[in-house]
Image: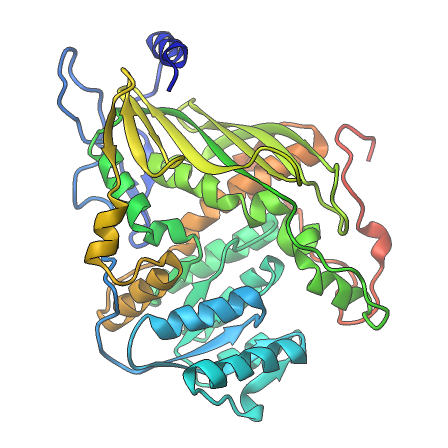
Length: 459
């Protein structure tokens, strides 16, 4: 880092007040934990832990799940991510299989069924291939143990609610909701899952990526001191889109092109950038109190959402998180996170590493050692290794309520950019804002309401 940046940061730290102990959210298993953090004694170079070892969750990221009870999974949402998650589940351990598939489109179901047969020798019979808006119920009711839900995010809350009602363990791809109504559904189902001792893992795969997990442990051990702020990025080229085909009705066009429609994806700040926001809420243990930001649509081809956002979050103890995401060709790209502390900073840019206030790199994750010591380094597979181990070992894990924190933060940022107004945690979590179309069906829909938001407008 350039010297002038270090000087600026040190000057900022000398003139900034940071609140002391704050409530923090546990990673996945036990809900709320309490911070024991305190600043280091003046003149002391020793690390003062932000949280004591054993008071926070660290997954055991082994190559393969321990053998145990046979587990049958059903996949709802059989597109690219659903197909990937299905194979990740099968690669995560022995004695696991997939017995049912569901999607709103027959070709998606058959496509995954064919792939499972060709690559894994698993034959999904016709009577276990379900199609339609209620396919998720048929999959869940088909004698499975685990639901793998990888539909467009809009559908996730109701699927999770029904799966918990039917006592199924769940893997939920991120994001897990697109609006406040969905958020509250997720939170209610998460509480029921905890009460029923159901295991829930979400697709925020950095929680199962060894470099991030070890970074989290370093920060909890006080390696960067008290956290004073951060910046998170997901800037990339334009994402995929589908041109409308003559045979597609309104519903089919939007769902096949789902990543470009607000009601289905939540916009890319929710659908994709939630990963980076999640890293900061995970590492800091803080929720945002308010958000103010802006965004716009410059180059997107289909859909009704933005292609760039810039959001300033004020967190519970007064520190700030800057969030930036963009999907436009020909621009500077950066997908990383930066967390500033009183003693230095952590970043994932250029590999997970810690740099002190003098510019010295004092820790870096050893990627070569990981490759030498582990056969499985894919966090998408390690998610399922951990889920299977928790089920077989009767160990609690419930990540939906934690993922919902980052998810709601992204929703706050999106709505601030759409409206031009400040949004708050309290107002958004209580909001009646519901992204479900009034005429949701699998055919013709009223497309007039799907318009690009204009901040500061009369409407």
